[in-house]
Image (tube, rainbow, N blue to C red; front, side, top):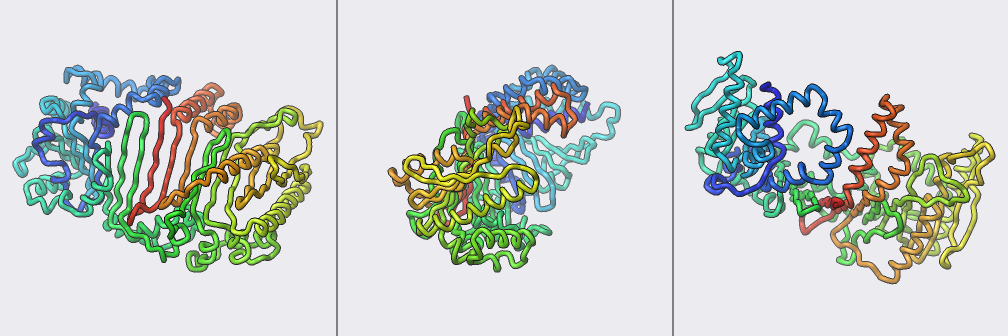
Length: 579
């Protein structure tokens, strides 16, 4: 019984309600009582918003109404938990939702000290209800073994140990718990001591709090100075072995090395949820880990994403590929097998040209990826597994030279794929040069299905690789239909002259509604995969996939941006939920 009640308390920790309380107005903020050498602290300052999102959103309704959730509620463990909740509702004279809002109305704060102790503070807007809850828990803990419950006075507070090694106390409307008794004593000592010993007085915490903003529903502070002293953390920051990671997250590792703190801020505005991360470390423009992703001019940066029909995701980066690859020996002194293979293949495709000075020097730093759902030709058929189309859009300095260079490499790549396909008895690709909207492009397509290939087509019919050059843009796409859509999009962009997003080096946008559409088109294949990999029954697999599809559809649109705001590196994720 006590274990189930502890689960209920854990729920109180995770989700909260909102309403300013008299207690909160009269009592110092929790960080005034938390020791100065704390490693990390999480503050839920507007619990009502968090609770509404967690318990009353469409996403929650979809999950709780699903057969899988209803089936889970029939499990013995969950039924026992529900019985415990009903018992507590009766004893406290309130339903659990109302009780949860009252118990957490002033905010929830959790911290990890430098000694590894977890501290929790919950500010209740109803001190009497909190006292009732504590009395109930103490009474239940004494059942069967009254001696297990111990109490002691310390710094004017009554500290309780219910026999599980943890310690807690209640001061007015504030519940304070620590994973070890010495952790609770440290909190009470900080409370009784001068403010200079508290986290609240730490300049780094104040700076992180300011960067999070006053409108954050929740915020977190991490003392990177302490974290980087942990075994393996500093070694991991000093070691560069992943070129792809360094290219995607340019400057982040360097910023982590220079930073003393990291701040996280969660903001909720109706159906829009945003999470912002900020590092205080200044990234040097001369840093080899960041220079290739940092624009020096105010009109430079990642470009806005291209808009095409059935868009699933758009990704835009500002990356100087020439500068990045030129510094590879310093960035990655160990030549891995993957890097060697990459260089060998590039040597074949580009006829032995120097990859740094003759190939990558052709490209400007603006790089974009596009992912979209395909619209298949009914005369050819639809593949059994429908993959999205994807494309790489590059900007070049010298369009004519780049067009010849990419055309040669593209045809070699198609030839190599056709050759290896022939070795497996699979038809290769046929190359054509059609024209669309006055733009001539190259396309490679698989021949018509053989007589033995009846019904849903093999997966290779998802691919119709294409290459198009338009103005100073080069499009390399997996599907001809996406190439044509991008030609239209690029023509509109050329007429509008879009402005670069200054101080933004990475921009990723996801349309979850369109993602749900392509997942729905592959529902049968996903169900089969679930049955084979997890051993589920047909009904169980269908329920699991339908829950996934429903949840994805409700997510709406998501945007992730990474860049440098002033002297700080900042990442921001914004999710707009569907109504």
